[in-house]
Image 1: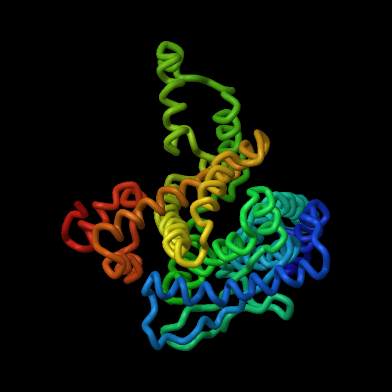
Image 2: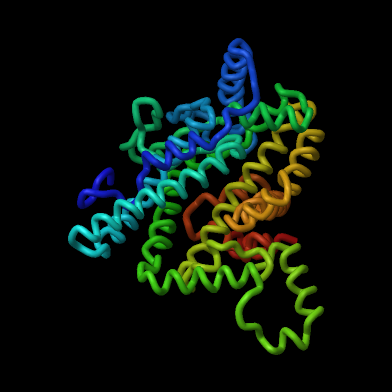
Length: 403
């Protein structure tokens, strides 16, 4: 995808350059401090593996250690890793877009200009996110010399390539902002990210299932320019309040506004939909609902595990959770909150909350081994509706109520 027909649909090199130019380096630390932080994070990642395995019971006693590397990266390293992942995941869509591009010199020029514009936009988005991500289990990016990953062609029954990223500057920045014990906070973060690594390495079909859903979502993308423009126009009107209004809305006035406020507070579709949501097709919304269920499970499970393991190995876990949850809910300011909603990041925050409630209720109802049936196949994953009503998942998978 570096060059199709003489030009790129997305200038990935420009995306990386833009992000690196706009991204701040992070909090100041001495060289000795940096080395100590990297060493401690590596040690915590190694120790977390044993803690998470023992708590989740997702592996047998004789299971081999993870074959995926742990990479301690700065913000620029996180950007490079995610650009590689984007290129891999978006490849089928970009090929489809390339085929629809007009032929001849004009089409080539349009592709070149469009690729640079999109590259800048992707870079700006990655710059915004690069200072907020503490860690990530990267499942899609292929290995490279400076960014190794697990085996591309694993043995039968093993998961495909992956790597665990820990963004050291962001971890240090947040622990300072929260004024919590650095040792405890770093281990607490590693427990969350190690849970994600355990999920994907212990459940070999999970990566391919999620990738298949993503590709189905991208396959439904509207490529007709007029359709896309119209959807964006409608989305903008939705956010700004411009455009035609339902006459009933004027008559109901305050009641309608109150309903919207309640929906927003509860994370409902009417009040919490992002710009991305509003330009989707109906089929894409169905796919996204399934993906939302899966991602809520993964994020909620990681939060449940990090807090479940925490009391034994993280003495200040209660203080960390209280301060971190408050910071997560508030955001950095009005601009940050607006961008989070626009990009759909508020939905991700709800995934942590709703998913953790689902896991906790399911474990309370059927125990950890009973909950682990969720990893049997795609059919045992919770739906978006079941995330909100765990008893329905318990009834469907276990044949009894969770009461």
